[in-house]
Amino acid sequence: MLAKDFKMYDKKEFYLVIACVNLCLLSLCLFFFKNSFLNIILSFELAFIASFLIIFLSFKSYEKNITSKSHDIKATLKEPLFELKKIKKNPIFVKFYVKNDDLRPNSKEKIKYMVWFFSISKILSYVFLVLLFLFLNKNGYLVVGAFLLGVAILPLSVLVLTIKRVR
Image 1: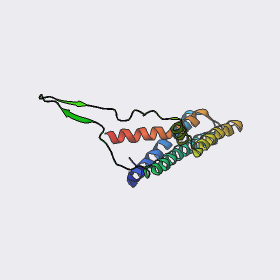
Image 2: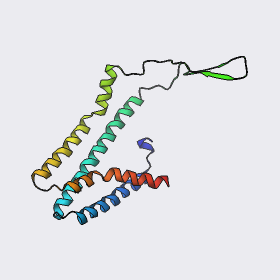
Image 3: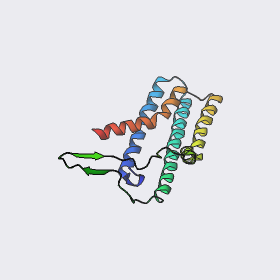
Image 4: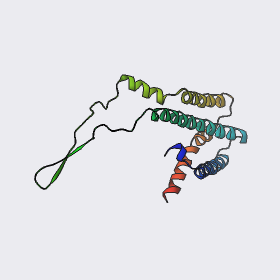
């Protein structure tokens, strides 16, 4: 599914599920953890913001790379990928011939794919998450359970939305 195919009601539904999961997990944190209200809110919501930033910037980076590469590709097939040969008897045998053996990327392609995966915005968002963790820990605001649940909001939201759509 392309980003352009993601309809507006799908986005609204996704953000509604994120908000509901956020409220449910935050209420669980407030109920189970006996730290101060401010420490729990800071750990939980800042972890959520950092993890959302990681996923959003990763998505934008991949989207930019894919759209830039899709303009270079021409959808022409010069020769068939397989051939059908009919033998004089009744059965038809399909023989597959390997037309392109070089499916393993060379070193230049490996570097290109590595640059795609390790974009600067993605690395900076991970650095932001680590610095946020260290900042909360140094100032005594860190509640580890709330921090972990704050990071888990988006995966749980995707799980809830997937289960809802399967039914």
